[in-house]
Image 1 (tube, rainbow, N blue to C red):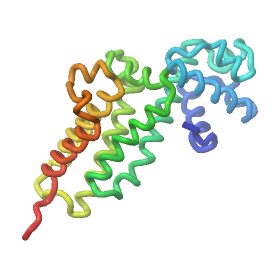
Image 2: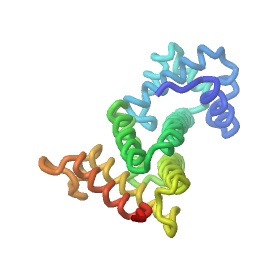
Image 3: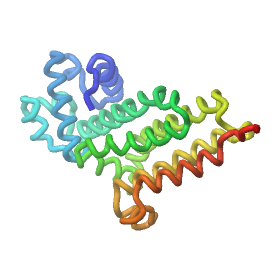
Length: 236
């Protein structure tokens, strides 16, 4: 995940300054120094999870003192909250950026790519980042629900809704579908399929995968159910 500093980081820093999570001192830093601090936070967040970053390690990676970090963020709590906001915004932005490409595909292909792309992202990310999002989603922390789970879940649902709307416009879908409800159901199904692969303890409950029941087989069955349920009947 390599954000564009000018288009993604600068506007976010301005917004979070207005919310009191970062100080004017940080905003006035030389852009290269700002970038070094942001990169250090992102690296620590990927390894440990953004809510568990080590302040001393961030300082060492950025080449600044711990005291300077407190000048930039005001407190350890605000630095952690900044880290959570930064990572969540960048991940949701990354996911949302794929929506137009997925919407151009036939619905079955788009849904498959949506799931596979999410799994590939998780597998390529550091374990700390994946653990953080799993904790936020499944452990019921009210603060993380609003700052992490809802934005990320909304971005994912919007991707499926965009694919459904594009499929409707192409004439792939039945006329009488409740697209809003169907989109939410399909998104939830694919989230279950993906999370059961990433988090084995969930698969113990969902009972989706084992040696004989491969992810490919389960995905094929799921897509077959979905497409048969939503597609327009062919007139012979």
